[in-house]
Length: 180
Image 1 (cartoon, rainbow, N blue to C red):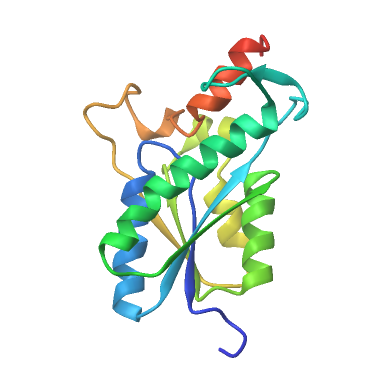
Image 2: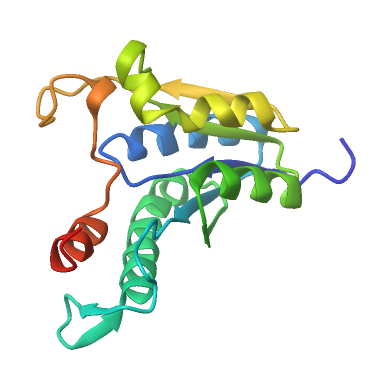
């Protein structure tokens, strides 16, 4: 299609299974001869992004700066997967709710497709936690492929349905420091 980037958009949440999704997207991109764009949504939620907190490097930074630092490091780490396969990779992050960020990026860049992970939540956990993947599938103007992640024996949770590993270490640290 004219106007579409020759990239696959891959939203990542830095969960335990993010690398699995990036690897799957890399395989697809390699087969199609296109690149991948790794995208992360930084959602500060109820927190004031300008609130100072302790940085892991010492000193103080704003909540937003801590989350941006973590996003850059984690995106660079995940970028090694497509790079290792010889697939062109770009990384980006945007602020806001994950669904809104993904849809806005897809509308703006018109990727070949979106490849994203899903925990396959059902019943109560789906109702309580929602499904970013489901909302993107329903609302995106480009094709969306979901990759159902598999539970790993080493995971702290007993099932992917209740996985909370998408809550990043920096977010946990900031919430703990601010009493949230």
